[in-house]
Length: 335
Length: 274
Image (cartoon, rainbow over the protein chains, first blue to last red):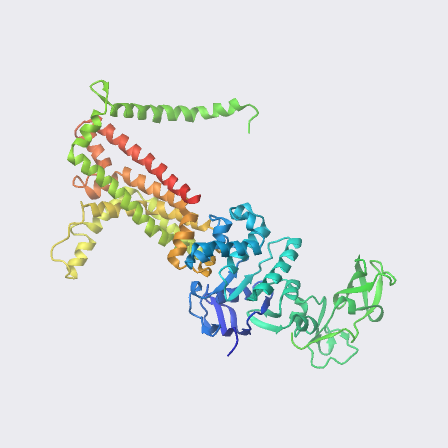
């Protein structure tokens, strides 16, 4: 096996509750994989198991050709950036970053040089003597990152690293992370519940649901061809329907061949307004510049549709016809 | 809170009066008594006190027991506190209740229970004899060991509770973070847990040390007149020998030891912080 990291039928849990069941997964050196899923899907648990912070109930973890299933976390060579950053509040930024190197008994001159390099790479050099509580959230997040990369782990795990930052900082840190990953060429697993973050950063996305892998593939593949109703909903398809007895949501006829799909999904811009077999009431309209976004109340449920701003406008309360055409439909083979 | 600050001062008056009349005045009388011989100021009482080898022995025994009781409860305390903090809320509540429960039982009753356990015909001796390990009963009662056991049991909760609260106030995930960065459990304790819980340790350590110095019932019952501590000696001086000068000296020594310990421990805690 040439896989860099391999999880083989990994089963994880706390006491009687199984959080992750029979997880199979492999990744290549230098790859950035995003673990995507709603909270409680087992992604953080999986991460903790890879770092060695919990013992699996079953299965094995292999890293770089070595079975690390029972290896304690301090001997794995895996870095982890926590959602809470978990900085040491009693140590300065410099000492936080130097923590792992001191444990590895790195000589003083090399230690100073490596810590300074890591601080420079994350733009923290001028804050080296501060304590964590004197830093902003974004700066703390950089310290956590610098502390993890300075020890040169074989694999870096990031647990929702940007979720505590405000929107602007999040974008900034996102591109920073992507730059660092390119420069270091280090394999990373990035846990998130934010699909746009996963799409922007990852080479590959793994969507998790209830402790299992729901779908795995490149960002394009997952965005264009979600494999299930669940993934479609998670990837921002606003209009996702289940097929019952050959009818859309069990009530409306479908004007085309559904093949073996159990669900159908349309993005807002694929919904045709002003004509078609379905009727709905406009519940709200938002002008977004290029387009106007409509929210329709229909027997099928709420529908989100987009129309060019130049098209005739519909006002709230209007009843309009709309179509869910075959052009633009995504067939979902699983629930 | 008040428009006129004098109202606040008036509210303080009854408590202040109580403290001055009930505490400060007696303490000053006591302290001055300890520095007076034959109507003049002197350190003669101290020279007399430390001149006696029995008194020196009692002083060192008190100091030694206080120190060992504090150290041992700190070591055991960290173990128990870490185990408790790791549990779910339900188990944690029950364990803490079990730790607090002894505090609600009179120290006299608790200490007498040790007589039943440690005595000549107590559980330990009878058990060991029946197992054929010993032929004649061990003398545990009225030894330093008995006082040590009694004091540990008496003051252990006062160490564990501050440690539990300190451990709970530690930021989330710092321990796993240190583990992932390469620290073994011992290093995690020295470099992360200890510096982040030292305030709890200072509180617990002060309570246990000062408590052990000033405990009366436990050394009186478990140590008897064979294992005197400063507190039991003080009582003996006053009620048996009617020797108020020595008693005052012992009082001053106890106060000095308590205050010094507190200052020292606080210093220790803040040095590590920088």
